[in-house]
Length: 183
Ligand code: PRP
Ligand code: ZN
Image: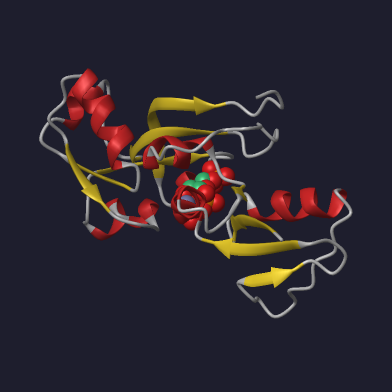
């Protein structure tokens, strides 16, 4: 039985399910089960936090996973990127409250940035010789400035609507993740 790990909710969920359907695989997890077996194919599907997927694949608990390159890069596990599926295009950016005067990365000196991408962000700050401090959290990053947890955030931006809704503006793009279908 082949085991595949996909995101249980979030931006990749719908496209991952759609891809399996287009392959002719019938799933039946109506009740939000976190593990399901396809009706017509020897395939077991695990619904996981995307951040955990590289570890599951590394440990061979899952044979393959569908996950963003941002997560692959952050987790830095010894696993292979075998194919780019062509969805989930996004970028990793730093954002600050709309009201903040921002001209360059220097404006973040001594300030706190909340992120789930501490490895990638630290590398970027080192390259820019910034001493901004990283506050690592595991989700709901965009509310951090609004509740006084941090001065800025570093998170994925796709449509930009999450930033907008939370009164933030994008000020630095750290990485762009393309979505071409080649490997
Ligand atoms: C990402 C990210 C943002 C959102 C940005 O979440 O954490 O919250 O997407 O998208 P937008 O610019 O279109 O609003 P994701 O779906 O990857 O879920 P996760 O962070 O819980 O893994
Ligand atoms: Zn995630």
